[in-house]
Amino acid sequence: MGANWRPIPDDVRGSARRLTEELRAVKDRSGLSLTQIGTATHYSKASWERWFNGKRLITEHALESLAVSVDESARLLGPLLEQALLEAEQTADPTTPGQRPAVVRAVSTSRISTPHVTTVPETTPPETTARAAVPAPPRPPSPHGCAGHGDGTAAAC
Image 1 (cartoon, rainbow, N blue to C red):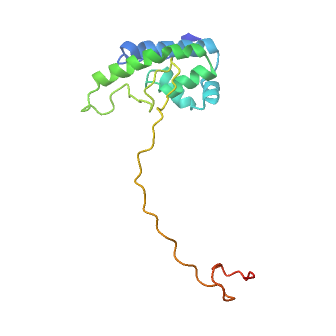
Image 2: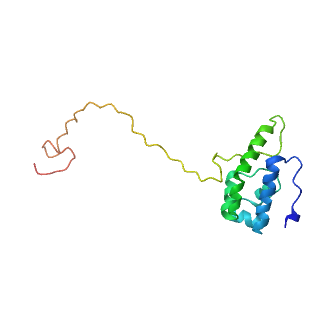
Image 3: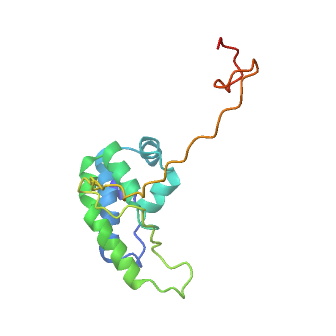
């Protein structure tokens, strides 16, 4: 199946090249088409084509989705993705528009290969100042003349 792959562009080097090769191996092992992987992961066929051909670096979320949907061993590519992202950031030239590979960093900074659980320390609420007791205003007389109801009900007084 690997014979059908386009050559990885020459400007994709280092960890990004290795990541692309490994992603292709995951796809080849799965035996699935781009359309089937897209359906299983909820990412478009076009996105997978870009990631498998080295046109873009895969996102952390897409890699996690691939691992869950197709091949759990894809989780092992998390550190390689992190390294590729670092290399891309270090070599990026902001004056060159359209430079490849485009770096897409997911919101999460946790590694894919490690489950992440965040615990929030319990805090005590700040001290509040005591408010002075304010007496309630007097109730207006009820419609039938006695003082005390104030809600308009006609109860026996």
